[in-house]
Amino acid sequence: MYRIYLILNRSLLTHLVPQMAHRNIIHWNCQGIQANLNELQIIAHEFNVVIFCLQESLLAPNKQLTFEHNTAYLKFSNTTSDTRPSGGVSILVHNTIPNSPVFLTTTLQAEGTTVTFNQTISICNITGGAVEPALC
Image (cartoon, rainbow, N blue to C red; front, side, top):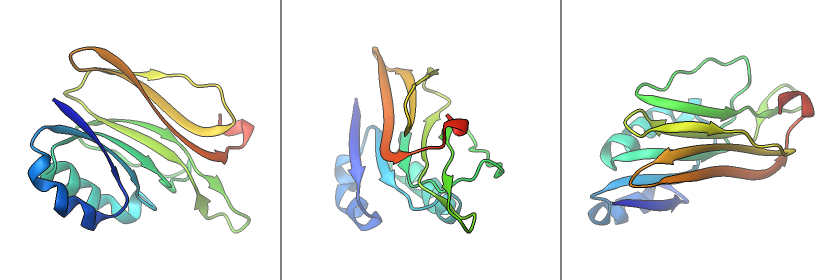
């Protein structure tokens, strides 16, 4: 059985622990993957997460990150006038879950994948921030 949780903050997870005995899908505004990489790994391990849908990933195209045991679908962030990244969405799928990319045509920051559990489903992670056409 799979359950989907929208996580607003880390403290909410401690209240969900007894309910999270199955493999889980978590949607999280992580406010920066690099800044929260350790937290991401802890959550994945403690809560048996097989899919993360992350918003505000704040990844610039020139940053190389590898996610051990996961396939990463990344829509890179816009950069502000002082070249800091802003926005960005990512989907991380554990390698035990069969998956493939879904190619989305949109000016929104969006990533998609199909995953197969008992059946095949599509997962899209979309945020309202538009991306530069060159990054689509």
